[in-house]
Length: 242
Image (cartoon, rainbow, N blue to C red; front, side):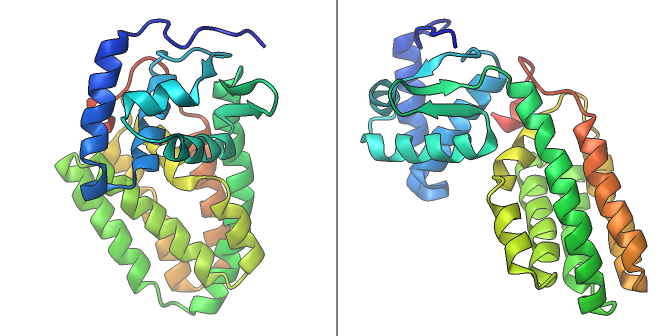
């Protein structure tokens, strides 16, 4: 693994200012570990952190004017996505094959959601009011160009399906895949049609409402297969995701 100094391509003073500004608003909007995680995520996808580059806890903590605890937590969450790797003797590095790690998850997630949707359809017996509310909220968010809300509602939709499957193991494995972070990555894709992303959930709801478990499960898998084909958004982030 190539080691690259983590100051490459950055203005150290500029990063520190940006980090402290983000940290100042963390308590009002999100835990600091999430702010740091998002900053690292967008840095990786924008190419500011290169493949194989070491991420130094102390330096990042200084940029956000915080202790190393939130940085370590952010590293753990990103490690769960496969975007960073930890070597106990050498530290934490950006993964060498970020694009492949991002795509792999859709294969695993598709299998999990296919199984969960089949179970959830049977258990719900046509009661999909909460899922329809999520889809309606996604459509409204897409129309308003509100990427953050679209992402939140999408995660809520898929989590509701997983929960209603009644299978705790499926839910636990799904939750371990850092779905929120991966949804953020998907919505950063340049040229993504937000309305199409929102309405792509509707056929799943319709099939579940009819009680057609096999069709709903098939559509859940197709839904993830589509997102697997999207280009990884390296170096061209949506300003809405920043």
